[in-house]
Length: 275
Image (tube, rainbow, N blue to C red; front, side, top):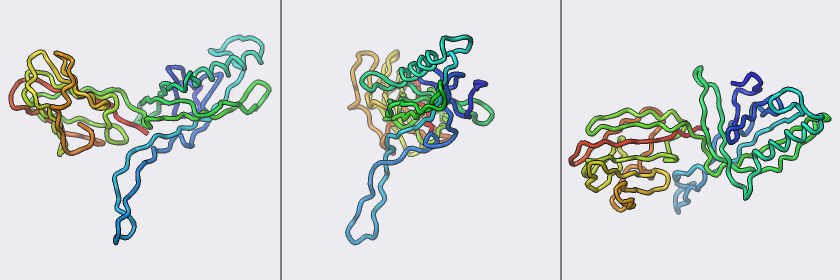
């Protein structure tokens, strides 16, 4: 981690570090460490006490950061007048967070885990006014509310190749089951009616996929595109065992590719969600 970082967790916005000698994320604990809340309600039934529990969906969330900024020149070294440097640093921070039309920006956080530095990224938009409270003549502190429509940070993409009739263990290192974000499942010919199974969960493409062709399932956008002609063949996709096509539970998952015939492969690309 940077030698000037004041927290075990440090952050980047669109590739620019929030741990610098001129500004810092100062709060070590608060909503940054919270878990996403759930949306949905249990169902009340006549003649039954309480309510029947129903599965919930993870909701969007707000991640608050507390920061300070001072008049130290960005990158160190000699600078202009102290008031000018302070205003320059504050403006640079504002431009990191404030985007036209409330557009999202990439947020990456890094932390130590099992002796190594881990990272995960997500997208957020600004939910506060960035008005600083002066803590000195040329220093201020302020809050930044990060509104995450998709509440998860995601680890880097992991690619797994499945060979027909050969069980393959895939490890989900995340804090929850994968939800398809950024993920795909490719069926690469020659394969007829290929299916990938993960315990009681399976997804199948009921087609003959020729040698040199493939069908790519987008696990987030729910499309099934055949490479040869660009057709969306989602009508040929069937699945069972889960709402998503191929979620991975936390920890080890045993996947297997089967097919009526063929010697092709399947390629799963997935991203583990983190709090």
